[in-house]
Amino acid sequence: WTGNEHADYVQIQAGNNEPLTGKLSHNRTLSVHGPLGDSVIEIHQGRARFVSSPCRGQVCVQTGWLQAAGEIAACLPNRISLTLHGQHPRFDAINF
Picture 1 (cartoon, rainbow, N blue to C red):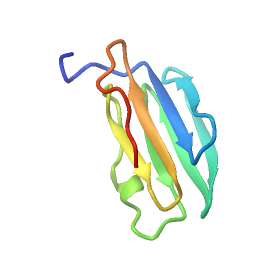
Picture 2 (tube, one colour):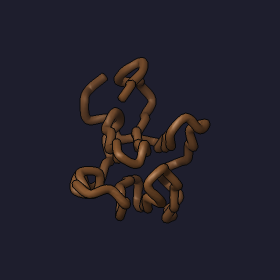
Picture 3 (cartoon, helix red, strand yellow):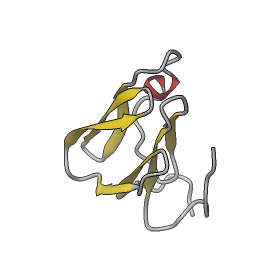
Picture 4 (cartoon, rainbow, N blue to C red):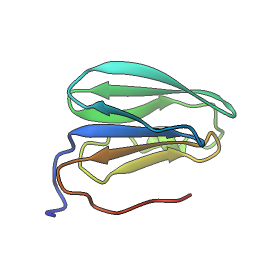
């Protein structure tokens, strides 16, 4: 693992639901429902980010664009996370 591996796909986890997985090569905007309401996630040109979320601190939005394998953004109050993956896994599991 080089630490700068470009990600191929995004995994979106919302609460205890099955994770959603999609290629980063398909541009789209998703609305993902959490306990506080909907978080908006944008996937564009091989990158992903939180556009908006109903949480107070907006740490998830301030994280900005993710593009390297292993990068993570999470809205803990709304129980939604984005994880980018490439050819070589950076970790086995993450809990929060």
